[in-house]
Length: 406
Image (spheres, rainbow, N blue to C red):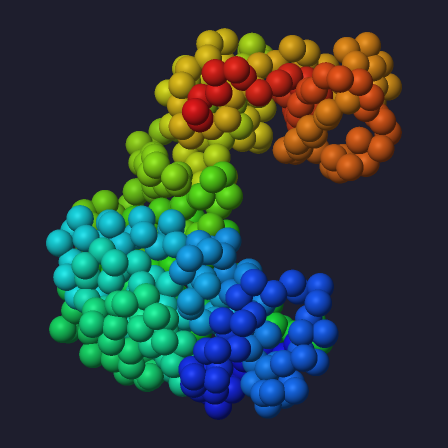
């Protein structure tokens, strides 16, 4: 079904008839979409039914980011949902703003309002700005649906023309999706910060005009692109890296931070040199993705009294198990040079039928190895395809019973 892609179609969803249709579709079976559409078109305009079905589909997808309760009453556009901040991440950022004493924020490039909602729930007044009339209508509807309209003012304007002097803080989330000519005109993620809309350089200058600011950027941003007067924070949620944020005015300029949710667990870099590499010990630690993106593996190694297994690989090894929230711990039973036949024989001898394959620094694909091994048996094991001391290696082990992330 067609998604909501114009203002008139969206406005129709806000009518009594449109809301009734959305209520009817709240629990419908997507496998029965055609039959459902045919039935509803007997009593409602085809365009409205199509828009309602598209919105119902977006709400189902949005539950993973916003939670089922909020997603069931909110409104979305496809691109807006794609770029929207996950609720847990937005709440963490709002809490940081609140801790700084911020009371009024300009939310630039507000999208469907995910961050504006989190800020408002933290008791902060928000002026949400976007140049798209449809996006602004969606944000306004979401603030009303969640009972936050008194704290969220929506303005349809070019963010580059907003006077920022009246705000305690600025939050900006430049659009990172656009049309790629090399992909035949299809939309996709933009990785060059200066190709953001507006460009990152403009957002940085806007951030410097406010007492406090946070700029949401892609987690793959190169460290050399981080301004010297900003703190760079990489955020993961349940082990998945979600975004990076540049903070201004916090007194933490020049530092890198990894924030792990839920928690939060914060790791602030101490500027440590790269740790030495050494032999594989009894335990292998796999740092969280936010830790790796923030270049804080050395800080984790120091807390573990550990070492790298290879100068180029972000695995830390240690001889003792220590509780730490920044890495997943595995007990290593075997460290072998890479050899598929030997691995197959070892796993067969141990009756391993459940095999988890992880790779870092190896050209071998996990599924390819799994097909060659054909694991069978009642036991489980984890195999790391990696390098040790510059040579291809296989590390066999299992998650620690006292995983440091617990």
